[in-house]
Image (tube, rainbow, N blue to C red):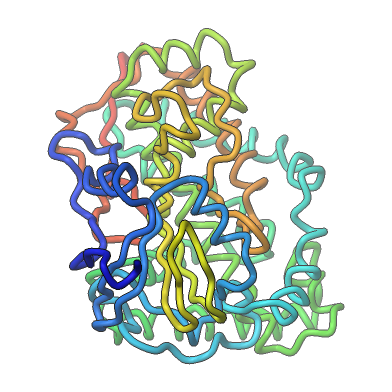
Length: 402
């Protein structure tokens, strides 16, 4: 049966014109016709594409589908490793399977619990208020990315890890390069090298003179300098780019849906589910990739060992079999089960920190500036269509100053 399936020429990536929050329409058509599709990868490998919610969760929960870096094939042209990648360096646990992955994950899980992240709420509120004050002093218009969306998560992850915030622009530049489809392999390698070099020196300093932060705390565990450096680089990069783009793109979505913006203002008690709905609706990480390490039958088809499977997070989060009227942004929805943070053993470690920041930053912004609106036509907002993490490069906004 598998041999008779048509083969996609590649991953659908073109979003519909004038609809910046919607995934490529081809993904929806595939989900309706055949949620498990054959697909050609940029290196010529013929693997699979998953577009339904049920199959997305099935693949990401099944240990027969590996996350090992050396088995990965990117579905995106121009990736640093179009074919076979090297093994994940020590500490880069997202590119490992159990038991290696489990060892690192156990060291970190207790430090990112819901309780611990909720304890940071007061500090997030303070940082948020300081940046809203700065926006008010500056006056309209401002670029919300630069003034608000980037500095809040940057400050939080720097403080959590014990990294000097003064260097955040360098981190953000390198983090963006790692997710940029247009960056050359040389540029991505240079970004990795720069981050690792910086973090290595910081790790040595923390070992010599510990301070009250996560990196210093981790020096007491049985980790080499290389492991600790790579863990720090991984957490720093992840904590900077994803939440910043959710805050910026989420604000763009709210300003583009005045009824939902009004709903958030009218009922801040529903902020938690509003954040979950924005996560589902926007799905800023496009895909997750796994590789079968055994023959697996899925949805009536045989996936052979060695074949790659790309999970479309965007398509899964818009699956009408799981979410009623999925293409509508509805902040009153209870969108439990979305896969924006992944699923299974590789579910995002920092998801609770991201949630705390969004639960504070969105309602605080719309409460401080009741007349907040775009300062340019929606079609002039520059979108990050060339990145693994979707978002906006800039978000010019204005409001009626007092």
